[in-house]
Image 1 (cartoon, rainbow, N blue to C red):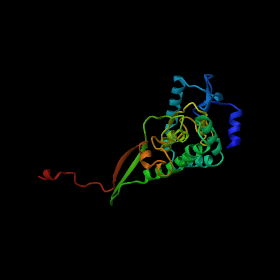
Image 2: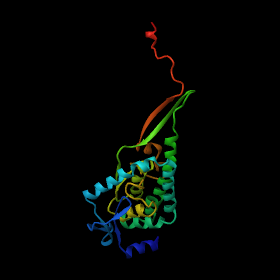
Image 3: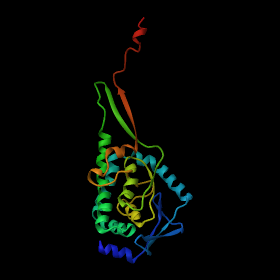
Image 4: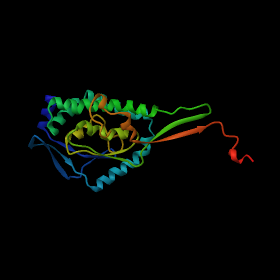
Length: 252
């Protein structure tokens, strides 16, 4: 962690917008500064305006059909792989960015960023399996089942600057359930490392999250959190067609 901290302090990062898989730089730059040392500039980020917001929304709509129809196991694999990368190769990158961008101690960064986000990305596929596996009973000749469709439109995720794990989780839970997401992160480089490194995420294609579900262990979320990102409907299929359509009082 010390070497990664020094690397970030000695250099400056330029954070682009990522729209439809492409890095977008419009030259409208703003500084990224340490909250505990306003004189130190960590980097710069390109500020989006309405034009780029519309482009991001269009990209989300374009990717929606393909992403939503992908088998849920394939979407889960993306998140589980991101968790493994964050648990190893990119752990100290996120921790160091969290310390510099939100003035956390090493202990706070480890539990608030890496540990908790790894939990989110590992628990949410498990909870997704619970959502899809909770099916009604059927009877001979009748099949009852629940279908969980992604929401119509897209999900807009506006994440806070002071909680790195929420910044990673808020866009990813809706995407895990088949939605496309437009992510508007806070102006802190830590959010960029979540998006660019472990997930390889791009706006509207593979960003993924949950709302108001914070903490580790039993607080890492639940199937109720993921349920809000789908539109469930009950379906009944009858394999033995009725032979008599008359009502009793019409017997005469």
